[in-house]
Amino acid sequence: MTNETLPGVPVVLQVLPALESGGVERGTVEITTAIARAGGTALVASAGGRMAAEVERAGGRTFTLPLDRKSPLQLWRNAALLADIIRAERVTIVHARSRAPAWSAWLAARRTGVHFVTTYHAPYGERPRLKRLYNAVMARGEVVIAISGFIAGLVAARHGVNWARIRVIPRGVDPAVFDPAAVGPERKAVLARAWGVAEGTPVLLLPARLTRWKGQEDMITALARMRHRGAVAVLVGGDQGRRRYAEGLLALANRLGVASRLRLVGHADDMPAAFALSDVVVSASTEPEGFGRVVIEAQAMARLVIASNHGGAAETVTHGDTGWLVPPGDTDALAAVLDAVLDLPAARRAAVGARARAAVQARYTVAAMQQATLEVYRDVLATDPKAGH
Image 1 (tube, rainbow, N blue to C red):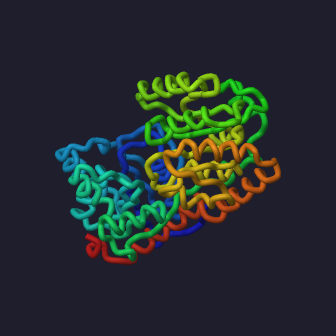
Image 2: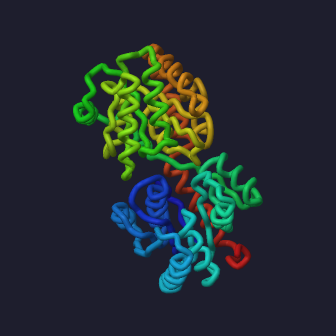
Image 3: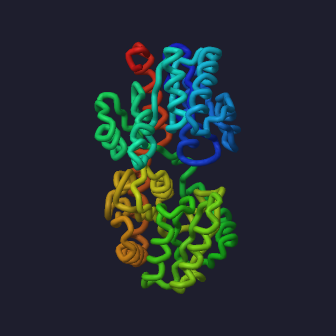
């Protein structure tokens, strides 16, 4: 973890819709840890959720507001509630991480004259055209943190943001947690039993919430087209109420004759063990992702990764060196690369995995992300907040 310190005693209020699960929430906890360790005060406002306890354990304090609601009236009310917190807690920086609460946070920052920073997490859709205005609040930060070079280019092109205001800060993993040497055989055996995977069976892991654009259908189709008929595809991720989609995946597997080789296992609490049990990890998103944390988590575990060649994932995989890239939605290409990777000798697989882990340790750690974010805070604190409004 970073040992950086911040000037004075800054009070940073991070704002997001809720604290249930996901990359935005995980990043909020990680930055809470960094702020607290740097001697600042870390506050988080959200609608609450199961990760609120993690914020508290990381040294932060939470405020529960209806920030997951999007009606114009509620956004206005939330702005007033946030302004009250800013004044009462003497907040110096408001850091917004999602669009609806960002509008409230931006209004509150303007009213109270404090610094406003944003993190632009995703290539938000722009249809209907009013969506561009809705999205634009994420480009109003004095500094706009982009989670990848792909997102940085999008912010500059769509919103006309000067590159001087954009900081590319990739997401990170903790290589001590995602460490193949730290996962013992029993942890893998527990998952193998739970998933019904026999010893020696090649495991193709696709970790993502069950939603169409994450590419689960493409994974099943590719599984049916592979030469390696003994491989099993494991889809890790909750359906978040999308029961019909999950049922459709099972129906597709039945039609293609691979139902016996498919596992829909829901949420996995021990992701390092899930990666360690896998032979290949697939990120098959059909739409570009802002970053794609799954890719670097798998690489940190020295796994062989195949990812769609677009968005942030294309920046974290060097084709043929630290993993493989395939055209998004091309199930024939995915099947062919899966077969080719499973054909590789053990020594070649180990070499690719080692290079992937080394690349993550060099570029994509939580510590690096924390340090870079603290530098953003330090820089904005040295300026007049009114200039950013």
